Length: 389
Image (cartoon, rainbow, N blue to C red; front, side, top):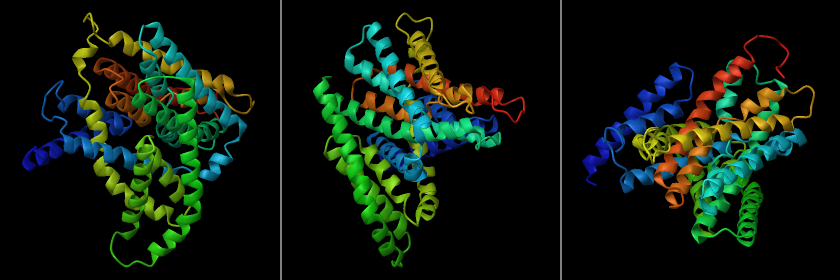
């Protein structure tokens, strides 16, 4: 790829992402959906303006590392420990049920176990950012149901990353066995615990040392060095790189410079994260979703969407506290957002999920993300001070 082609490609990617993201913002949706649709439009399946070169793919991979670093940075270890039985129960049901139902659906349709595991794992993810934004707009962030959803989302993130580490490791070996699953699960949990515990001891000293530096950009550079180093270690031991970036964010979130790191990472994320979502959209070929085509994936997309919605709504049944509305909890867990796309992309990259099924998964993720905000607004639309049940 010549340098001018890269420049032109990035110009188109960034412009398309921002224009489409702005459009989604103006209709009350998350910009991520606009970036996805922008990728579909400019990709090979529609206009063919940009193709995924090795360099653009590498920038997208950096984007997803930055994204998970941000997610970890915005999480709170203390809140995770205080999530409580109610939030933890909702999170566990919200992971196990979609995984089991998604796996069963794919096996019933005749797909191999490895593919079925990846699809089930993709359906476990919950994008709490979308739910939190809607609840904030409605002035309901202090609602009992909101506290349960936000607490459950922290646990959901941890469990989801462990599942992703396991299924990625399984994809590398090409087989599913109880022993392999147990080994990879133990490895993922051990890595997270070791990275967090060691990081908690070293990070404050590192941050104090960085505070004495005078060169421009020292804080953000060393923070990213820490994140990328953990990502590289995770990859070295056979885990997904994003689990290392997430662990780095969790550790640095406990330091006194958390807000400064968060402020400085945003411009980097604004450049690289949209590239990831546009590239995700570029992989979708709309022709594969033609409902009239014999080999189209439209029916599969609708089935996956139904399973995705129903399995998360069922998390409301795990609510036993009388002060917490079951419907807001269930609906709040529905949107998959960026985390589901990361799972689907990992399956495609591993050669486990074919392009047609990948397109169906992306559509399911998009539909759940579209559906949740108006649904939540409808639940709270009465303006009553009492939460809906």
